[in-house]
Length: 448
View 1 (cartoon, rainbow, N blue to C red):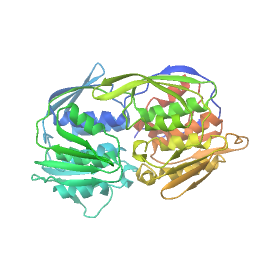
View 2: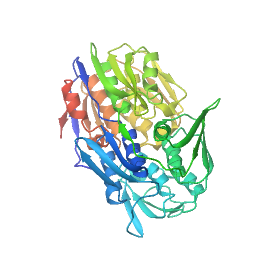
View 3: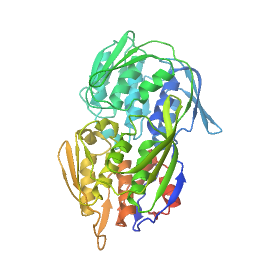
View 4: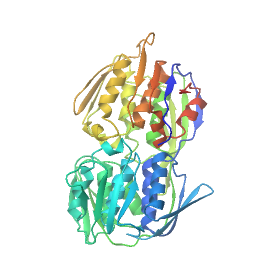
């Protein structure tokens, strides 16, 4: 992590009319690197997100696992040698996963079928996050995790040379759990199946189809049945990473809540499991349009145009896995909807992110004078666009959660609350050019 810093925002942003470019998607960037490491040949990745999480992934693949990765003219070239081709030199290989649960959990899937012992550790925030959600299914395949019964990183993984295919039920709505199992299935003989009871992001499945893995996805009455036949050679690919819709969400919120504003964002990832956020907002009367849809590298990509809007209350009770990362900024939007009560249910997964996000968002909104109630699985927000900013300030000091920091900054820019956000360096894990982009829109952010 880079040097710690705080930001101060105490002025309301004025109307804007801009076209902006957003960095590449973090989830797809990490998947592209991991899959390329398991393919035969040289893969080319364009528009890779150069955030801390992705750069940590590159560094660990190169220095700890012997994968050759070279950057030339903004293109990353990954030299793959096939399944289970990591080059390890020590009895125990140390691997730093930084703040990225996506990298840590998906990599664990690959390592559990690789001979050797691997010591995984992250930063202070990552080392507090629950790892049992992937430990339990990966142990069934044949891997061992030490110390026994430990639930968080640091952990040592001992890969198995005789992995066993399994039938899994994924009922948490977690793309990371599903993807970790699929990663392990690549080197496992036989057919691994996952009954996905709660739909989550499907980037891994789409990527596997793109590189001709033996994968099938069958729609069920409720969810999907995913099957993957392992031990098939995979070959190098060309991939262009589209702009991250989870980062775009913060700018959409800023535009919706800033009167007389308009924003156009091109080349945005419009995967159906990633634009549920937009569908929810459109139901709430948001003026949002998607145009120029194309299929690029197996994913839908398009342009998003947003106009400021008068919104209605938001109510969500299902498909939470499709917008788990966008919930904090949705809470901010809901808090400023006039005379309306918004309700979010089935949000228990928020407690397993970088922080307990519902609790942290309640602290933030309460400081702003917004009433809200939080239970283990529900959040109710009583919207109010007439909150007074005089003699009131907000202090955000959540450690290690970039989406809380970003949500706080949008709340401050829209309302003009004097706001100090500590540990803002965490934003670099997903959205490294956020501050200059906001300044380009006319927002005032002071770094301390």
